[in-house]
Amino acid sequence: MRRRATLPTLTCRAKRTDRNLGGALAGVMVPMLIRTAAEPGVDSDLHAQRLLSTIVYVLGATVVLTVAAAPWIVDLYAPGFSPEQRDLAIILTRYFLPQILLYGLGAGMAAILNARGDLSTPMWAPVANNIVVIATALGYILLGGGGELSALTPGQSLLLSLGTTAGVAVQMLVLAAALRRSGFPLRLRLDPRGIGLRRTARMAGWTLLYVIAAQAVFTVGTRLASGAGPGPVAVYQNAYTLFQLPYAVIAVSVITGVLPRMSAAAGGRDLAGITADLSHGLRLTAVVLMPVAAALIVLGPQITTLLFAHGNASAGAARLTGSVLAAFGFALVPFAGYQIMLRVFFALQDTRTPALIHVGVAVVAIASSIALSQTLPAQDLLVGLAACYAAAHAVGFAAAGAVLRHRLGRIDGHRLLRSHARMLAASLAAGGTGALVAHALRHGGLAGAGWTGSLVTVLAVSAVGAGLYALVAHLLRLPELRTLVSALRPGAAAD
Image (tube, rainbow, N blue to C red; front, side, top):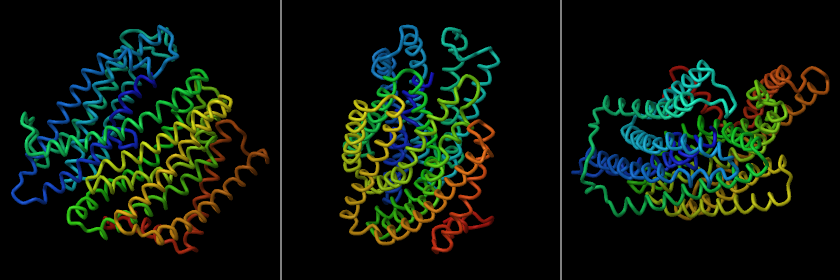
């Protein structure tokens, strides 16, 4: 079920992770819409309608082609399936693939809302999706569904596939309703003239290359994990999903706020404004994600024991997931910073440069992963794959920063280095102390490796680590933390 659902989700998802077409569409469309709205004599609503219509036609055709090619897609993505698994995967994949259109259309609507100043609705719309999916899972349980493939009935398969796709449809409808409330007329246009079709197609081509490169990294990682059997695939994907969660909550929120401002500054050739927004976004993201990364590294096995050591899941698999999550923790800050930097290129309406940079990231990740797969045992390989992912995005972060420095003239480098050094010092103090607390609890017999012991460890280490991080950050006079605290106070004005 996980692998079948992952295919369209990785292809096009509105949560804007590095590898999905939905995030790339939104990142490209927001600058285009903002620049169009600033041009005199241009009907910005008509332009947006034509862009949305193009998305419908292109992704609609993509859905038709991929539904027909479902058997080959399943064979590419999961070569180790048994005939029974393969047949079910093909059926479910064909139900899931329409999500490509739904996610893409939702991403386009989210971009229009962002360009019109509505930043909150696109961030909350996925909650509707989650509610529908949770209801689907509960319905599956009520119908007697279990974890055995052989016991899956046609009705249960239909419920899972249609319910999951319905969640994406509801998410898209929430965005559509918000657009209508804003006064935007939802209407398909058959004539794409006026959107700069050649320029849009060229930008879309580079964006597609970016998505393919990103998808290749995850696909190779999953295939290498699948070579060790069925269990490691779930371990790798669960760890990756948890790693993405703080990025989606923190970094995506920052990107949503700064991308329209950077796009407006780029339209006015205000390079100083772009640099200021980039610096602010990087620092505000890092001040939150750096201690979170320390927590993932220190508490990875305890976190995953709390989440996954239930039912049919083994304690060993849960702890292994935590070890992989800890390795992904090293990727959190460079990955988030890399994604923010790529949005500067999008604001400048340059999709070629980020695509080429990401091809380089993919080459580093894939080559190092394949090299490790030849030497490491299965369990160590999963941790190694996560480490390769972290190293590749650190390279991408450095490369994007160097190119942007050349393009913008400056990226506020001294201030960024000074702030990140202080954040790193505070995070090391918090993480190191947290590791000592976890060690003392474990070897003092106060907290074992089970669920209760993991809960005690997570609560104790989180309290000590958060308090110490805040204290050291205050002593080091970290202004970003003060900015964050001020923004979170009731009645504080939005930045």
